[in-house]
Length: 160
Image 1 (spheres, one colour):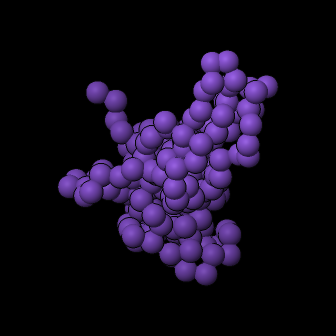
Image 2: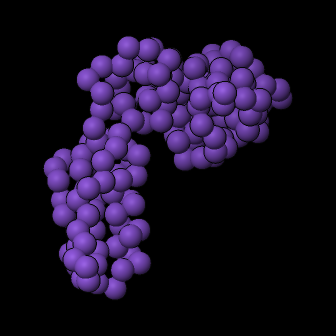
């Protein structure tokens, strides 16, 4: 059984295993960019001998998130469904986090002359550069670039 948080790649792992197995039967596990793509359990045979079946499950989430920072990190990663946390709040926190880790790829992405700590400045530049109509749309573009890996690949937690 493959179990984990929403939108972390459980179905993708099953599909990768199936692609390497000659004995795999049945279709592919549904994958998507948003939490909630897998709605129920699905079974996938991946080997004949010994008979091995992987069970894809919907993401499991803790009933509540007590720490606001942890909630922001989960939202930025797309584990919390988009729309629950305001995009500008996520964008502000992500900008702060990128600057904390001294990652300035956002500067190059949107042709800023220098890094900034002001999310309004970055959102205006994204609007000017991309044609986004408002700060919320710009924040969504910022989040999409991060989630696609265009701003670098790293974790949102500082190592101990």
